[in-house]
Length: 349
Ligand code: KG4
Ligand code: ZN
Image (cartoon, rainbow, N blue to C red; front, side, top):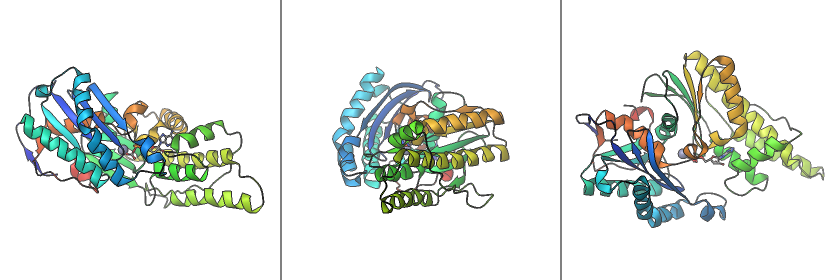
Protein backbone atom coordinates (compact mmCIF):
# COMPACT_ATOMS: atom_id res chain seq x y z
CA UNK A 1 0.00 0.00 0.00
CA UNK A 2 1.30 3.45 -0.78
CA UNK A 3 0.92 5.33 2.48
CA UNK A 4 1.66 8.81 3.63
CA UNK A 5 1.86 9.83 7.28
CA UNK A 6 -0.36 12.81 7.94
CA UNK A 7 -1.27 14.33 11.27
CA UNK A 8 -3.53 11.94 13.20
CA UNK A 9 -7.13 13.14 13.40
CA UNK A 10 -8.17 14.20 16.88
CA UNK A 11 -11.85 13.19 17.03
CA UNK A 12 -12.54 9.77 18.53
CA UNK A 13 -15.98 9.44 16.99
CA UNK A 14 -14.92 9.71 13.37
CA UNK A 15 -17.10 8.08 10.75
CA UNK A 16 -15.48 5.54 8.46
CA UNK A 17 -17.30 4.18 5.45
CA UNK A 18 -15.83 0.81 4.45
CA UNK A 19 -16.23 -1.25 1.28
CA UNK A 20 -15.53 -4.99 0.98
CA UNK A 21 -15.65 -6.83 -2.37
CA UNK A 22 -12.80 -9.35 -2.16
CA UNK A 23 -14.89 -12.39 -3.01
CA UNK A 24 -18.62 -12.99 -3.40
CA UNK A 25 -20.07 -10.57 -0.86
CA UNK A 26 -20.68 -6.91 -1.67
CA UNK A 27 -20.61 -5.12 1.65
CA UNK A 28 -20.59 -1.52 2.85
CA UNK A 29 -20.51 -0.40 6.47
CA UNK A 30 -20.50 2.85 8.40
CA UNK A 31 -18.58 2.58 11.67
CA UNK A 32 -18.04 5.29 14.30
CA UNK A 33 -14.77 5.46 16.20
CA UNK A 34 -13.67 2.08 14.81
CA UNK A 35 -15.98 0.18 17.18
CA UNK A 36 -19.58 1.32 16.87
CA UNK A 37 -21.24 -0.33 13.85
CA UNK A 38 -23.96 2.04 12.57
CA UNK A 39 -24.65 -0.12 9.52
CA UNK A 40 -23.13 -3.21 7.91
CA UNK A 41 -25.00 -4.11 4.74
CA UNK A 42 -23.99 -7.41 3.12
CA UNK A 43 -25.30 -8.55 -0.24
CA UNK A 44 -24.36 -12.17 -0.81
CA UNK A 45 -24.00 -13.64 -4.29
CA UNK A 46 -24.12 -17.23 -3.04
CA UNK A 47 -27.37 -18.03 -4.86
CA UNK A 48 -25.80 -17.01 -8.17
CA UNK A 49 -22.58 -19.01 -7.67
CA UNK A 50 -24.21 -22.10 -6.17
CA UNK A 51 -25.29 -23.44 -9.57
CA UNK A 52 -21.59 -23.54 -10.59
CA UNK A 53 -20.46 -25.26 -7.37
CA UNK A 54 -18.14 -22.39 -6.40
CA UNK A 55 -17.38 -18.71 -6.94
CA UNK A 56 -16.97 -17.71 -10.60
CA UNK A 57 -14.63 -14.67 -10.51
CA UNK A 58 -15.97 -12.89 -13.61
CA UNK A 59 -19.56 -13.21 -12.42
CA UNK A 60 -18.54 -11.98 -8.95
CA UNK A 61 -17.04 -8.79 -10.44
CA UNK A 62 -20.14 -8.10 -12.52
CA UNK A 63 -22.44 -8.61 -9.55
CA UNK A 64 -20.34 -6.21 -7.46
CA UNK A 65 -20.70 -3.57 -10.19
CA UNK A 66 -24.49 -4.08 -10.28
CA UNK A 67 -24.99 -3.73 -6.51
CA UNK A 68 -22.25 -1.36 -5.36
CA UNK A 69 -24.09 1.96 -5.61
CA UNK A 70 -27.27 0.54 -4.09
CA UNK A 71 -25.37 -0.95 -1.15
CA UNK A 72 -23.47 2.29 -0.49
CA UNK A 73 -26.77 4.21 -0.43
CA UNK A 74 -28.37 1.60 1.83
CA UNK A 75 -25.46 1.60 4.30
CA UNK A 76 -25.47 5.39 4.57
CA UNK A 77 -29.25 5.51 4.97
CA UNK A 78 -29.29 2.75 7.58
CA UNK A 79 -26.52 4.47 9.54
CA UNK A 80 -28.69 7.59 9.76
CA UNK A 81 -25.90 9.81 8.44
CA UNK A 82 -25.30 11.64 5.21
CA UNK A 83 -22.39 11.06 2.84
CA UNK A 84 -20.97 14.45 3.72
CA UNK A 85 -20.56 13.31 7.36
CA UNK A 86 -18.06 10.61 6.32
CA UNK A 87 -14.49 11.30 7.52
CA UNK A 88 -12.64 8.61 5.54
CA UNK A 89 -13.28 5.80 3.08
CA UNK A 90 -11.74 2.38 3.74
CA UNK A 91 -11.60 -0.42 1.21
CA UNK A 92 -10.33 -3.98 1.00
CA UNK A 93 -7.19 -3.64 -1.14
CA UNK A 94 -6.38 -7.38 -1.02
CA UNK A 95 -5.92 -10.27 -0.95
CA UNK A 96 -8.80 -11.62 -3.00
CA UNK A 97 -10.18 -12.00 -6.52
CA UNK A 98 -8.54 -9.23 -8.51
CA UNK A 99 -11.59 -8.29 -10.60
CA UNK A 100 -13.82 -8.26 -7.52
CA UNK A 101 -11.35 -6.15 -5.50
CA UNK A 102 -11.06 -3.66 -8.37
CA UNK A 103 -14.76 -2.83 -8.20
CA UNK A 104 -14.51 -1.91 -4.52
CA UNK A 105 -11.26 -0.01 -4.96
CA UNK A 106 -12.63 2.09 -7.83
CA UNK A 107 -15.81 2.86 -5.87
CA UNK A 108 -13.80 3.82 -2.78
CA UNK A 109 -11.43 6.06 -4.72
CA UNK A 110 -14.32 7.83 -6.44
CA UNK A 111 -16.05 8.39 -3.12
CA UNK A 112 -12.90 9.61 -1.36
CA UNK A 113 -12.18 11.99 -4.23
CA UNK A 114 -15.74 13.32 -4.41
CA UNK A 115 -16.00 13.80 -0.63
CA UNK A 116 -12.39 15.04 -0.35
CA UNK A 117 -11.61 12.66 2.51
CA UNK A 118 -8.71 10.22 3.05
CA UNK A 119 -8.66 6.76 1.48
CA UNK A 120 -7.46 3.76 3.53
CA UNK A 121 -6.48 0.59 1.65
CA UNK A 122 -7.07 -2.28 4.06
CA UNK A 123 -5.89 -5.88 4.32
CA UNK A 124 -8.73 -8.42 4.24
CA UNK A 125 -7.21 -10.69 6.93
CA UNK A 126 -6.51 -7.71 9.19
CA UNK A 127 -10.25 -7.13 8.81
CA UNK A 128 -11.13 -10.68 9.85
CA UNK A 129 -8.84 -10.34 12.90
CA UNK A 130 -10.05 -6.88 13.94
CA UNK A 131 -13.69 -8.00 13.68
CA UNK A 132 -12.88 -9.11 17.21
CA UNK A 133 -12.42 -5.48 18.29
CA UNK A 134 -16.11 -4.92 17.46
CA UNK A 135 -17.09 -7.34 20.24
CA UNK A 136 -14.45 -6.86 22.93
CA UNK A 137 -11.09 -5.37 23.87
CA UNK A 138 -8.08 -7.02 22.27
CA UNK A 139 -5.37 -7.77 24.81
CA UNK A 140 -1.79 -8.10 23.54
CA UNK A 141 0.12 -10.26 22.88
CA UNK A 142 -2.71 -12.06 21.18
CA UNK A 143 -2.92 -15.10 18.89
CA UNK A 144 -5.44 -15.01 16.05
CA UNK A 145 -6.59 -18.24 14.43
CA UNK A 146 -7.84 -17.21 10.99
CA UNK A 147 -9.98 -19.84 9.30
CA UNK A 148 -11.83 -18.86 6.15
CA UNK A 149 -12.63 -20.06 2.65
CA UNK A 150 -9.40 -18.61 1.29
CA UNK A 151 -7.10 -18.48 4.33
CA UNK A 152 -5.86 -20.54 7.25
CA UNK A 153 -3.30 -18.74 9.36
CA UNK A 154 -2.05 -18.40 12.90
CA UNK A 155 -1.13 -14.75 13.45
CA UNK A 156 0.75 -13.34 16.42
CA UNK A 157 -0.09 -9.76 17.38
CA UNK A 158 2.59 -8.56 19.78
CA UNK A 159 1.00 -5.11 19.85
CA UNK A 160 -1.90 -3.30 18.22
CA UNK A 161 -1.74 -3.57 14.44
CA UNK A 162 1.55 -5.53 14.43
CA UNK A 163 0.95 -8.74 12.50
CA UNK A 164 3.34 -11.71 12.41
CA UNK A 165 2.26 -14.87 10.60
CA UNK A 166 3.65 -17.88 12.41
CA UNK A 167 1.74 -20.57 10.52
CA UNK A 168 -0.22 -20.90 7.29
CA UNK A 169 -1.70 -23.57 5.08
CA UNK A 170 0.61 -25.16 2.55
CA UNK A 171 -2.26 -26.18 0.27
CA UNK A 172 -6.05 -25.85 0.78
CA UNK A 173 -7.56 -23.35 3.18
CA UNK A 174 -9.72 -25.01 5.82
CA UNK A 175 -12.98 -23.61 4.36
CA UNK A 176 -11.90 -24.75 0.91
CA UNK A 177 -11.33 -28.27 2.30
CA UNK A 178 -14.79 -28.16 3.91
CA UNK A 179 -16.32 -27.11 0.59
CA UNK A 180 -14.52 -29.87 -1.35
CA UNK A 181 -15.49 -32.55 1.17
CA UNK A 182 -19.05 -31.21 1.15
CA UNK A 183 -19.18 -31.63 -2.61
CA UNK A 184 -18.08 -35.27 -2.24
CA UNK A 185 -20.89 -35.69 0.32
CA UNK A 186 -23.33 -34.21 -2.26
CA UNK A 187 -23.97 -30.91 -0.48
CA UNK A 188 -24.40 -27.61 -2.38
CA UNK A 189 -21.84 -24.78 -2.21
CA UNK A 190 -20.80 -23.46 0.29
CA UNK A 191 -20.80 -26.82 2.06
CA UNK A 192 -19.04 -25.98 5.35
CA UNK A 193 -22.23 -25.45 7.38
CA UNK A 194 -23.73 -28.72 6.02
CA UNK A 195 -20.67 -30.78 6.95
CA UNK A 196 -20.64 -29.11 10.39
CA UNK A 197 -24.30 -30.02 10.97
CA UNK A 198 -23.87 -33.61 9.77
CA UNK A 199 -20.76 -34.03 11.94
CA UNK A 200 -22.64 -32.75 15.00
CA UNK A 201 -25.49 -35.22 14.40
CA UNK A 202 -23.25 -38.22 13.69
CA UNK A 203 -23.23 -41.16 16.07
CA UNK A 204 -20.28 -42.92 14.37
CA UNK A 205 -16.88 -41.61 13.28
CA UNK A 206 -14.53 -42.78 10.56
CA UNK A 207 -11.17 -41.95 12.12
CA UNK A 208 -9.04 -40.04 9.61
CA UNK A 209 -5.36 -38.99 9.76
CA UNK A 210 -4.16 -35.82 11.54
CA UNK A 211 -1.82 -33.68 9.50
CA UNK A 212 0.54 -32.32 12.17
CA UNK A 213 3.51 -31.77 9.79
CA UNK A 214 6.91 -31.21 11.48
CA UNK A 215 6.70 -31.24 15.30
CA UNK A 216 7.58 -27.54 15.69
CA UNK A 217 5.56 -26.33 12.68
CA UNK A 218 2.52 -24.08 12.93
CA UNK A 219 1.72 -24.68 9.25
CA UNK A 220 -1.27 -26.64 8.03
CA UNK A 221 -2.07 -29.03 5.20
CA UNK A 222 -5.60 -30.19 4.44
CA UNK A 223 -5.40 -31.67 0.96
CA UNK A 224 -4.34 -35.11 2.27
CA UNK A 225 -7.30 -35.17 4.63
CA UNK A 226 -9.67 -34.29 1.80
CA UNK A 227 -8.14 -37.10 -0.28
CA UNK A 228 -8.60 -39.49 2.68
CA UNK A 229 -12.34 -38.71 2.67
CA UNK A 230 -12.56 -39.37 -1.07
CA UNK A 231 -10.59 -42.63 -0.68
CA UNK A 232 -13.00 -43.81 2.05
CA UNK A 233 -15.99 -43.09 -0.21
CA UNK A 234 -14.37 -45.05 -3.06
CA UNK A 235 -13.45 -47.93 -0.76
CA UNK A 236 -17.08 -48.31 0.37
CA UNK A 237 -18.37 -48.15 -3.20
CA UNK A 238 -15.87 -50.78 -4.40
CA UNK A 239 -17.21 -53.06 -1.69
CA UNK A 240 -20.72 -52.35 -2.93
CA UNK A 241 -21.63 -50.54 0.29
CA UNK A 242 -23.13 -47.09 0.73
CA UNK A 243 -20.57 -44.73 2.31
CA UNK A 244 -21.52 -43.51 5.79
CA UNK A 245 -21.53 -39.78 5.05
CA UNK A 246 -22.24 -38.66 8.61
CA UNK A 247 -19.41 -40.79 10.06
CA UNK A 248 -17.10 -39.35 7.39
CA UNK A 249 -18.22 -35.78 8.10
CA UNK A 250 -17.51 -36.35 11.79
CA UNK A 251 -14.12 -37.91 11.09
CA UNK A 252 -13.15 -35.00 8.83
CA UNK A 253 -14.36 -32.37 11.28
CA UNK A 254 -12.62 -34.03 14.25
CA UNK A 255 -9.32 -34.17 12.38
CA UNK A 256 -9.54 -30.49 11.34
CA UNK A 257 -10.52 -29.36 14.84
CA UNK A 258 -7.78 -31.39 16.58
CA UNK A 259 -5.08 -29.91 14.39
CA UNK A 260 -6.16 -26.26 14.18
CA UNK A 261 -7.01 -25.92 17.86
CA UNK A 262 -3.95 -27.96 18.91
CA UNK A 263 -1.60 -25.68 16.99
CA UNK A 264 -3.34 -22.48 18.08
CA UNK A 265 -3.10 -23.42 21.76
CA UNK A 266 0.55 -24.42 21.42
CA UNK A 267 1.23 -21.02 19.81
CA UNK A 268 -0.63 -19.22 22.61
CA UNK A 269 1.55 -20.97 25.18
CA UNK A 270 4.83 -20.51 23.31
CA UNK A 271 4.29 -16.79 22.70
CA UNK A 272 2.75 -16.04 26.08
CA UNK A 273 -0.53 -14.86 24.54
CA UNK A 274 -2.91 -13.10 26.91
CA UNK A 275 -5.79 -13.72 24.51
CA UNK A 276 -6.93 -15.96 21.68
CA UNK A 277 -9.06 -14.72 18.79
CA UNK A 278 -10.96 -16.89 16.34
CA UNK A 279 -12.06 -15.39 13.02
CA UNK A 280 -12.99 -16.02 9.39
CA UNK A 281 -16.03 -17.79 7.93
CA UNK A 282 -15.16 -21.20 9.42
CA UNK A 283 -15.26 -19.64 12.91
CA UNK A 284 -19.01 -20.24 12.56
CA UNK A 285 -18.24 -23.95 13.01
CA UNK A 286 -19.87 -25.10 16.24
CA UNK A 287 -17.48 -27.94 16.94
CA UNK A 288 -14.48 -25.66 16.45
CA UNK A 289 -15.86 -22.94 18.71
CA UNK A 290 -16.67 -25.41 21.48
CA UNK A 291 -13.30 -27.17 21.41
CA UNK A 292 -11.28 -23.95 21.26
CA UNK A 293 -13.32 -22.49 24.12
CA UNK A 294 -12.64 -25.59 26.25
CA UNK A 295 -8.91 -25.60 25.46
CA UNK A 296 -8.57 -21.86 26.12
CA UNK A 297 -10.33 -22.22 29.44
CA UNK A 298 -8.00 -25.05 30.41
CA UNK A 299 -4.97 -22.94 29.42
CA UNK A 300 -6.31 -19.81 31.17
CA UNK A 301 -6.32 -17.80 27.93
CA UNK A 302 -9.45 -15.68 27.34
CA UNK A 303 -11.09 -16.29 23.95
CA UNK A 304 -12.79 -13.76 21.68
CA UNK A 305 -15.05 -14.88 18.83
CA UNK A 306 -17.19 -12.47 16.81
CA UNK A 307 -20.82 -13.39 16.09
CA UNK A 308 -21.31 -15.26 12.80
CA UNK A 309 -22.31 -12.19 10.80
CA UNK A 310 -18.97 -10.55 11.66
CA UNK A 311 -17.02 -13.78 10.94
CA UNK A 312 -18.08 -14.08 7.31
CA UNK A 313 -16.98 -11.38 4.88
CA UNK A 314 -18.40 -7.98 5.81
CA UNK A 315 -17.33 -4.34 5.60
CA UNK A 316 -17.60 -3.50 9.32
CA UNK A 317 -14.51 -5.64 9.94
CA UNK A 318 -12.68 -3.66 7.24
CA UNK A 319 -13.59 -0.41 9.02
CA UNK A 320 -12.35 -1.88 12.32
CA UNK A 321 -8.95 -2.66 10.78
CA UNK A 322 -8.80 0.61 8.83
CA UNK A 323 -9.28 2.46 12.11
CA UNK A 324 -5.72 1.35 13.06
CA UNK A 325 -4.40 3.38 10.14
CA UNK A 326 -6.90 6.22 10.56
CA UNK A 327 -5.81 6.88 14.14
CA UNK A 328 -2.19 7.04 13.00
CA UNK A 329 -2.89 9.20 9.96
CA UNK A 330 -1.59 6.49 7.62
CA UNK A 331 -3.58 7.04 4.47
CA UNK A 332 -3.38 5.68 0.93
CA UNK A 333 -2.94 7.76 -2.16
CA UNK A 334 -5.46 7.73 -4.98
CA UNK A 335 -3.18 5.55 -7.09
CA UNK A 336 -3.82 2.65 -4.68
CA UNK A 337 -3.82 -0.68 -6.51
CA UNK A 338 -5.93 -3.74 -5.76
CA UNK A 339 -3.65 -6.66 -4.86
CA UNK A 340 -4.73 -10.29 -5.43
CA UNK A 341 -1.82 -11.35 -3.21
CA UNK A 342 -0.93 -8.99 -0.39
CA UNK A 343 1.32 -9.28 2.66
CA UNK A 344 -0.40 -8.95 6.03
CA UNK A 345 2.87 -8.33 7.86
CA UNK A 346 3.75 -5.43 5.54
CA UNK A 347 0.34 -3.90 6.23
CA UNK A 348 1.23 -3.61 9.95
CA UNK A 349 0.93 -0.06 11.33
O1 KG4 B 1 -14.46 -15.87 5.54
P1 KG4 B 1 -15.43 -16.36 4.53
O2 KG4 B 1 -16.82 -15.81 4.57
O3 KG4 B 1 -14.91 -16.09 3.09
C1 KG4 B 1 -13.56 -16.00 2.79
O4 KG4 B 1 -12.94 -14.90 2.99
O5 KG4 B 1 -13.02 -17.04 2.37
O6 KG4 B 1 -15.47 -17.96 4.65
C2 KG4 B 1 -16.32 -18.77 3.88
C3 KG4 B 1 -16.01 -20.24 4.18
C4 KG4 B 1 -16.65 -21.22 3.22
O7 KG4 B 1 -15.66 -22.12 2.78
C5 KG4 B 1 -17.71 -21.95 4.08
O8 KG4 B 1 -17.95 -23.27 3.67
C6 KG4 B 1 -17.04 -21.89 5.43
O9 KG4 B 1 -16.47 -20.60 5.50
N1 KG4 B 1 -18.00 -22.08 6.55
C7 KG4 B 1 -17.95 -23.13 7.41
C8 KG4 B 1 -19.05 -22.97 8.29
N2 KG4 B 1 -19.72 -21.84 7.95
C9 KG4 B 1 -19.05 -21.30 6.87
N3 KG4 B 1 -17.10 -24.16 7.49
C10 KG4 B 1 -17.30 -25.06 8.47
N4 KG4 B 1 -18.33 -24.99 9.36
C11 KG4 B 1 -19.22 -23.97 9.31
N5 KG4 B 1 -20.22 -23.91 10.17
ZN1 ZN C 1 -12.78 -13.47 4.23
